[in-house]
Image (cartoon, rainbow, N blue to C red; front, top):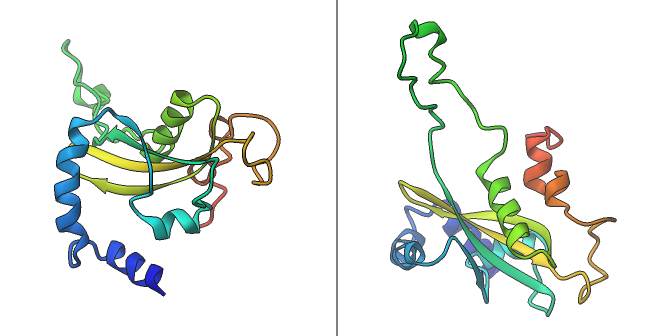
Length: 166
């Protein structure tokens, strides 16, 4: 029952207590490295829904990625405006998927289970990535092989590939 109220507070973060708490936390997060292992998830309700358990072998990593409108740099030499190619460029991967990949590279012995958005400001977005140690948790269904995130098998990867209907 408590998770229901937590998730509701996060959904309407600017109307609830969440925004004020997060403004204070983000000040500290900006001073930290871009990839930080944390003890407990910031959003426990979301983490539990995505498969996190408070047991040995489950690790949560907070990843900071840039936030941008994805405008290309304007060419210096002369061109007609039609062939400038500055606006309307879209990134092939989502920032969430980029965050998962960075976490997977930082911790090569762990497997990415899932991730979720935590907070954003004008310059950065923060995601928390749930990772599993296969040697300690062989019962977690992750499929065969290593590197789920690089094969597009996480939820963010499946969404980029167009496999999640929304």
